[in-house]
Image (cartoon, rainbow, N blue to C red; front, side):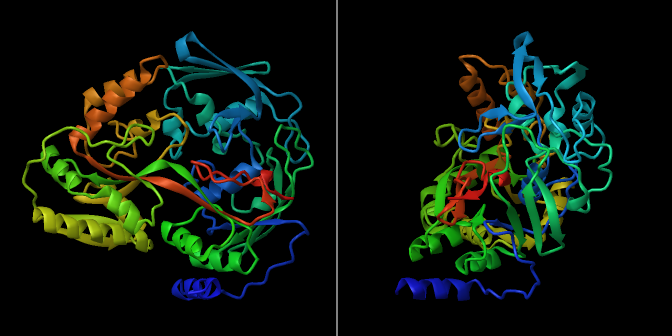
Length: 476
């Protein structure tokens, strides 16, 4: 089959039908980025990567992560210092930083941005949980932690921790937001587009390279069609199915690298013994799963943290297997296909009866919160390059846990793994082993980061975090 035929077949199989939507012409040279429909720009409520990407263009926090290395770089803070054996962080604020309305960004507003997440209802409060005190002394912001937090500078790169302007009381209209980031919103059509241009008041180290348009698309198939038609330049994240079809069709622009995340199945505490969960895990042919179902994109995972050696954990493989339900969120055929493959393998190899139950993502989340499930599909994505975040997600107080499992010994191991030191990798490994032997998660594979970038577009490169700083985008 020729390349044109493959592309045509790809388009037809995806069921593409472009809605007719009036779009004002973009400024010449604009880089167009695919975005899912926006849900919220309230920094306490942001939960989707597309919302966070836009927020990060309008607002800038103390630091900013380098997409390729994951290292924190200066942003609102020009430098920082770690003292008191990792418990005290001092950030030195850059002078003469301004909001898009021309007024100065004050240290008190920086502090208010952090305090906003210490109020009830913030999705990011856990990242600030170790903080016990926050003070401002001239151009210095001093943060005191109850335990060492070696990745705090990276955590604060999340733009949701940006300073808070008192006029930003409603987050519904991005054109009305006063930001301190490299871009400002100059046009917005709900469900269609967001237009961004350089913020003329920005004085930070990351000035915008050019205008950007977020093209709002309802599904990944539409985004791909628009890319093939030349109407979109960047698709920040692709499914393995789409990437496989693009690779086979030799469409230029496909980029890939190792991702910083792991696909898992949660096991509700009490649904299975650790030995029975080990039986399910041992029966999975992970290399075949990656090769045959994910088109080779990804890495087989027997452990949770992507950087640790991917080898089976020790433990018994005995135990009874009662009938089980496996919850899968609707809308992702690739995940459903993996689930059906595993259910079939478990039946053939173990005689297990596992039923796949497909539900809306909101209902799956509700069932996880109320512990009314047996097995549930999940993913762990590192917010920072520090692997500790993967382990913290299953501590007793973490909202990401959702298994019902609580173990004070594990909590202590995770806390002991936090401080830096030459033996830290071993401490992390011990805590991870404890989690794996508890049988409350079954790792499946580590992600591949897949991105589609039109040749000639600069500022977007596949990276472990699928991070795209919109202000960095431009054209050769």
